[in-house]
Image 1 (cartoon, rainbow, N blue to C red):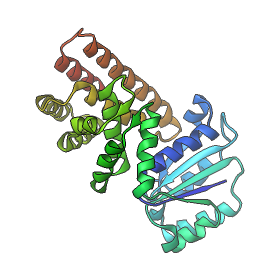
Image 2: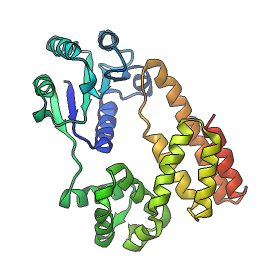
Image 3: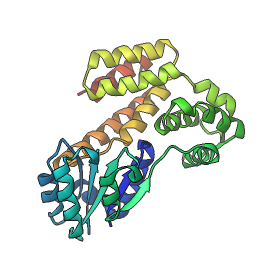
Image 4: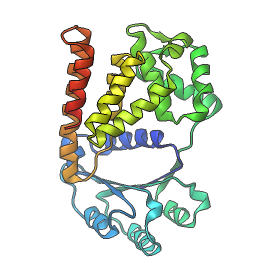
Length: 288
């Protein structure tokens, strides 16, 4: 079965992709060698279809994710539609589009050969349920007042940002069982959230000076070290892998990065090293 993911909500798509990978690629070996990520308009359709014809190495089906599917040329779109009529049973495609399928002729045609799933940002009671579910996934309850406070800020934030707020509150309360409104208010810092994203971008660009400057600024504004480490760890866990060779390298680097963050967290909590020095050393490692 092939899938068509439509709509703007990237966080929900990533969760769905993880579930499919867990189902179709149950082993780490399969995850490394039988998953491929491509971008339409960047990678050639010829290369993608060549990969699709390759027998999977460690799974029953090769999983191929194609992002920004709308960027294929009109000719490539026709070739792809024809290919899907006789596609290999050993390959599962996930086609990703920001658009609504019902308003695009190509996506309408693609939907006839795939299972179409829409990913829109939840609103109202659906958003409330999503907030509670995310807290539950962290083994925490959350009060109605806290849910309401998060919902009120949802208009200017995507689900990825909301998830980060819930995770920050979860880290903040430690062993407590329920996140309260005051906990959300305590950890909320819009400017700090923006800087965390800038820090992630700086690390990805291996811009050591900029990354260290951002960390210094966060510390001066009294953002807790565990918040910085926790948010970086969450982001690293959710970096999608790509390509057969890239998979293996990304897997090792991500594992190493997580180990660095864990070591820094333990060192800070046990007082073995100055907080700022520990964070700076960790940033240097992440930027390597």
